Length: 178
Image (tube, rainbow, N blue to C red):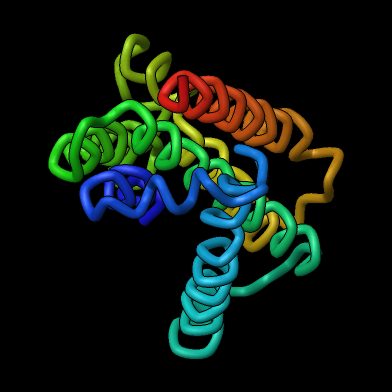
């Protein structure tokens, strides 16, 4: 959803109104991302709730760690969407960029196919995708009862991805203002 945030403002002609406000680019970005974090978190709760109640999937680990790391994953993905929104010239381009990340994420993260069964080049690409790390976190917490020490590497990867994506988005957003 954040992929369309800036391009939609430009296409509607409301970007000038937004820029005339006494707020910083960081505040604009957070104002666009934070509501979707809540939406994504609600969706994650529903999915986990359905998994537990209907399918009997256990949560052997810490539910607070799962909630916190789910929020980090959601924020990382929304940040990349916001970055795409600052790069794209229109909504169509923004959506095409999203599919450029979405499809490889589904195919190369271990979601559809076993990660270790993929060729090394596919695993290398998969390691760069946030979904790969989030799937490991979810499986670790829910099915193995992993603690935070077991998930440090994947949590750090998500955090780095989020910070880099937000940094790129802010740089691009400032360039579009100039």
